[in-house]
Image (cartoon, rainbow over all chains, first blue to last red; front, side, top):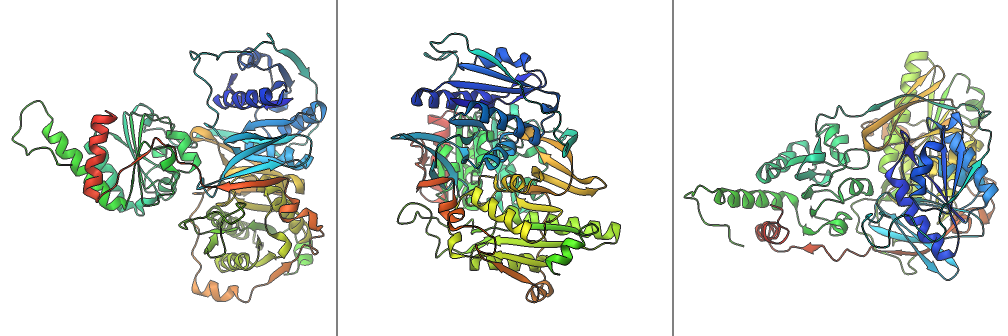
Length: 348
Length: 282
């Protein structure tokens, strides 16, 4: 059996749960196992309907007041109890602030393997080999869990995208019809309270909404100094786009927190995304990789940003970016409908 | 200060242990090694993992604030696994202001996954008489799984909070701000002892002063072997790992990327034309 621990908020499944179902179904079908989705919630009933659409063979609900708000100790106890009862071959959670927060505890408690941030898997004979990014995604490492018994995996967000509903062969499978529905009873009320959520707020005031921008030019660590960020502003202005930033820029105080694009900032998918001096940490890629056209400018040819880019320039951004700005300005200077006496188009 | 004194004084002393990991300089060009199980790292220069320098700063600030408010001494201890590289990052931690260092060094420690690292850290913390807080960086620039600190918390039987962007001592223990997805921050109160994994950007790590560097040379650095930690050969290194490394490889580049070469002006002109005529996005 393959066990998925669904993530949810406000009585809705989070997108990562659908991605886990993709990985879970692939593994289950390939290994000839069944797929179970576990819902841990105060009132799991409200999520059952959505979980059916994930196409599991079985849905198991774990109910308890202590399961919300999320507390790693409580989720660890619940999942450990489920695992020892059901003995799944693989237990999948998201590589998210929930998944990487509790699943390592379950793995360490049971002394079983954990594969963090999994992006891919393959069958090697009887064994499953998982791929995880290492060295800031400059390398990939394939690992084989040792021994028999449950293996824990956190799936990198975006690595197992659900199929679009209108694609052939998609939709709630399969042959089995309705999934079985089980309630799993575990007493969580006696666990000591060691951590308690006392507040929750948005980090940035949210003045800047990049979600609706058509064109975004984003600067990263390669900019090196706050004073150089004008290069990004200039190119964005020339293109008529918005300005964004990667985490190091915001951490260094060169731009406010609401400019940040990535898993802990804004998620964007503009028509054109220009990444300047951004190496492409996994957390950044999650926030922009669905952009229609991605341009990467970086002096490091091995930078992972080139893996998601459509066009790449490996060079010093301080030489290239002003040239792009100049070319775009020249182009735009020529294009307005009112005929201008401007010079001809820049040669190429 | 001896472990015994630290342990006996723990009712009134804030003791923070910080894990520092030596990682290849992020600017390094990386190559896969001969047997394709790791990178060729013999020639690389190693630095302290970036998030760990933030963890070290957070530890120093936490102890300074506690000392200032309760007129009690706080103690920061730095801990690292590995040979000379680890000793070097420990000296950097001492130069930043940590009181003493624990160096876990043994030929058997080569290789190993997060579980092995977490076990060694937990053993070392216990052997040193425990602590109030254990800090790690949110993730390392080598394995990058972001799970070692959480696993260490489990093995120690302590509470934890991951991806911490703010921390303060309060009456009940610690108050920590945790980063969630989509720009959300949650505030937690945690009972000590506990483990926090520290996110980049929580602070500006201080530079070591010349005086700090000189003082570091006189500070205590304990070196513990596998035997000192009471661990068997099969518990550490790649033998102790729960996952076997099958292969390390350079990721295949997605074939859709078109690299535009030439002088800056030529590359810029090519790019703009592609964006206009091929991608039709400007």
